[in-house]
Image (cartoon, rainbow over all chains, first blue to last red; front, side):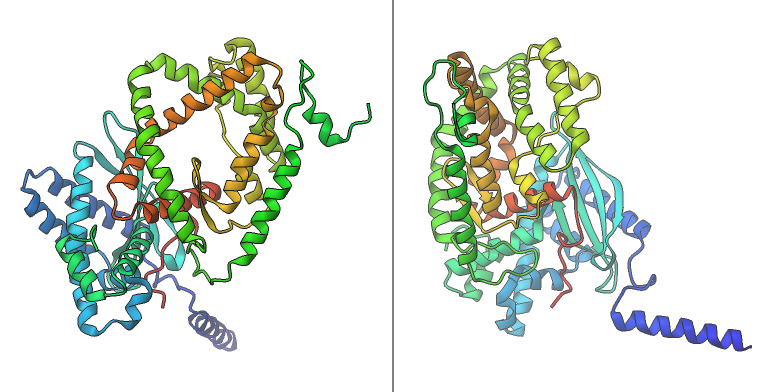
Length: 206
Length: 263
């Protein structure tokens, strides 16, 4: 009996310590296999959309929806807005999320169309602890070199979600964050004007 | 002849002409300038961020480089695609790789990669004897080209990345890599053989051709960054630094990954 009590004490102390240190216990981090199958589902959805033959406008809208459903949109919006986020009102924050979703649909649906005819295949996954799981996929085409697209997946926001996409070693979120900062700068810090331009596709001007 | 070690290496010249004077002095001055410059930037950088205290100057240089690309480099790369048949491209690539081997050997040794340095020497031998420098039988024997540079050596030695700089003609670089690139040109062993006209001409021709070739190979990415993005300066900076960090680290690391849940 004494042994058991000691064991219980030891394990509960250890658990409390781990929780206190904020280290992810096994239950908290997303499983590698779960992350991998999640990405495979998303990739299949995107591929289906690209080969569906729908109009550009329809593709843009549907791509926005795929993004909204599968990515950690509030956290991503906060990240790409950078320093400005802290000074934004609640209304602006909501506006930013909607603007970002529409921007993603427009820009990335267009970009992905260049990959038409190529296959995107999930080839591996690596666990990076608190930062999530990095799932690797390769885009193969007939006349182009293979390119690597990695999906950073995490469930720290609740459900399993995409938190970043890394194309050939370049993080889309980090690049976008820098670009947005420069665009806001060019508009002298006018966030509302920037968000309007973002939603309407006028970010090249300003 | 009582020559200092510096002068000794600079005096390899068949015709007796004075070749590069004090290349090492130039490098030390450049290094000192960069170190001082690096210390001057006091802005705090968030983890994973890019230090760019010289942004206004860099933007100016970027515009210049972009113009150079539009007018010279891009057309040259398109010409390369048309004019160089598959075989020409192969021979040029092999020749460039062959001439890179001394630098690769030096850098691999300096990084402590002795096995790779040995492979570099073997490659040189095989490709010289069996390929005359323009064919690449060494790869068939299991000795592929493993490129490296002074920037990577500095990284291995623990030199910090330094601020972002855009260099005229050379393009984007971190201070460490920029220094490395200049040092590479100055220190290249083949560069000291200035008496051999054939070699000098060949190296110049290869350098120009190689520039066009690399531009042609990466046409999609470069064209998109320079001509199809909202802000080509930011896109180039973000793309280059992230790519380079990844290349030096050999893949994704925990630090390199984004954290959207952080405050």
